Length: 538
View 1 (spheres, one colour):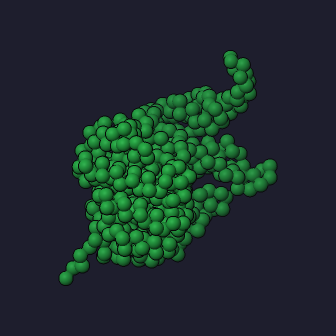
View 2 (cartoon, rainbow, N blue to C red):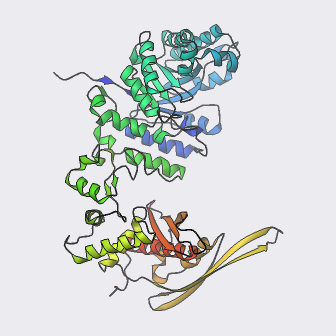
View 3 (cartoon, rainbow, N blue to C red):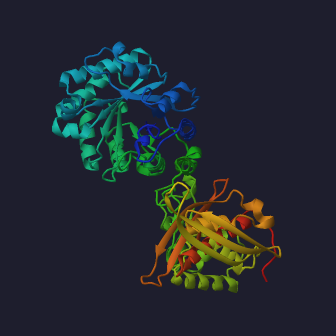
């Protein structure tokens, strides 16, 4: 007989608590796009913001949402002590938002009730009770975020529990236990949650963990094992300070790890789980942030293998170094090419790039030798996949000579502008030969690399249409050796209108030379990838 699984409900607060992240500011369009992706993924609740707190959040709730799975949820505070429900403008704004569910934050630590709210403990309990009852009376689903619950429990367990009990008895569908400062550890979560379940059934309890000790995911999973049946978090762990519990780690763990998958079920099936990597990276794209390559499950390096022995073992049995099949979460295996690589790494990367070559081909051994020599000189190909593909295809004679750089020159001038401000301006001249014609162009920029980029891409003759949408996204410099003749490595990240990104590398004792090498690689890769034709290299 199959074991009956208990339902775990997923509550996403990316658009509200995630917006507390330093440097994050969602537009209305951003919120609508992310909310649609979350609903498509299959979460149960989407907390869209705090109606009345700012124009964007108010506009979000004024917009029609046709969620197929999720409940649109508004956030707010319990009513103010000393005011009636009808006379509390902030509370009325929440009620008028029209959301299916409303999540209110309530103080549950006696210290914060006394110091932050400046009210009596009984008054706070009355506020919780009346607020929940008002939401239920409107036919809406009420949730209470018990702020500072775990610290409150440690200082005055009776009062923290009284707040939980009051919310539940007033009709709250979910009473959420919040580790607001992120300082509670998993064993404490387990012990305290078990105490709470003696008073309130677990199918009415949730967990909201912050990540200040790097334990938000572990605390959330511990709380589930201890009895809670709702888990709150954000995509990619977004949130103030060190972030919130990361749903892109929690969701696959609940679905794929037997200790959870055999006991619990969530509203996300395998067909939707395979989109979680896409949703994670979509958020980074919206925020214009480089994805964290080491992010569990969904990061570009989550299933990347560098050492030759590791790579060889993974090809024979992936479970040797991978805890799940990366395809289950929409990710992919990557065998990195570096100075530590063996022939198996090279062959695996060639296969990934759809480069068909006999493993016994002498050119493979020559490519491996060149990679190792270049790595010892400072090149890194595990972080510059586009440069490696060019190197590999050149070894096999598959890269046309689109253009030749005859010379370049860069000048930096410091001068006063027309406003009397002292500025620095870089000017670059690049001379190239394209289709037998010599072209020379000048570019200006706010630095030598920017100026070179502008000059190089100003006109590449017949290839110009291919690079119109090319954009230099990021630029990193590392000094590899000390002294006045230091070796410099430059990594450049590029992108185009398709939102595809690629990385190229240059190494030289001259930072401008290294930068220019990476720039040229970036353009050549773009031309090769987009199918530009040119004279073959003999």
